[in-house]
Image (tube, rainbow, N blue to C red; front, side, top):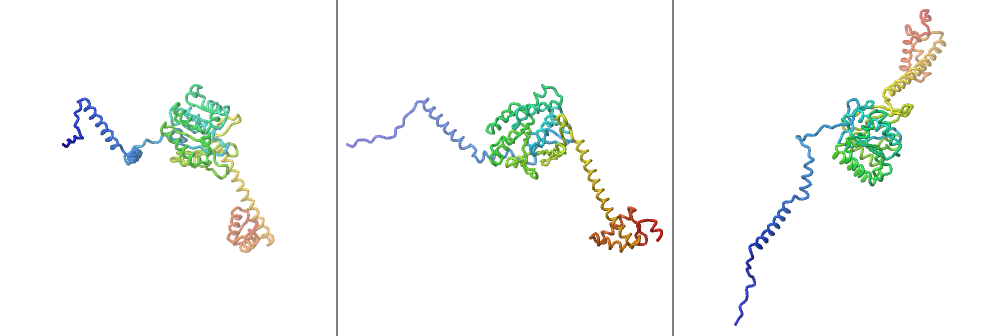
Length: 383
């Protein structure tokens, strides 16, 4: 007798509570799978991000807000990065002092603040504490505002001891804490191991740009020009990248008389008019626009005087030559013969010499009648 084969699959009836739990777990799994399926891909996420930066005909962009201006032309726009360049010891720090004073006082010399009671962060990475303190001292002298106001609106730090490893993070920390509208970095080169490292330079400028946009501040970076006298580019890859990204680049030049000339060779929009400062006998900063105009006027007058003297000397030399030929010819000479003699002696063509003779006659040095030239009007009357 064959034994009956048992059914391998048995329908087991589960309790209601356990059945519901299983169903809930299954639904949860379906939800997770569904969410995973509906999650945008990495490509879609990137496209969504990029769409947020698209500019269309309907895009509304806020006009640039400038920190400072000269004669109505704004510079150092908020939310952007800027540069200040010059040869070594050309007065870059002095320019920053004037800008800081203008921001605190409202106007310093021709530099005017476009902000209302702005907060300024000044980071000095090159000078020792005693020299950095002079920033405060000079700003106080120029502005004559209360100490409490200066200390609450101008935050100066000497960071000479800090390494490039931490300077950017420290700068970010100070900006986040102080929330300045304008940041001056006097010595940007200290933020990188090498200003000729293109990767580090690009990353630094990129990070600073992000800080500008995030905190809506203007970051002004001081960087030396190359050492060659005829090379006014900022140093290394760092200077190249900064000049490419900067909204404004100011340049300092110190002329022989000690005046610091400030110009704007590179600007994305309006070019700031030039202005000038200098140090007085006590080492304090003063406006030098009027002084430069006087010096330029004196130089022009000196050049004109030299030019006039040279012309008079040349005229006298030509006259002496003509007089000699006239005397050798008995006191008078035909114009054509005099032209020939002078042209041969001077190595010039007759047309040029003819112009010389015309000048001498118009100046009353020689006299001509009927193509006869003499040295005296009386001689001419006797002919």
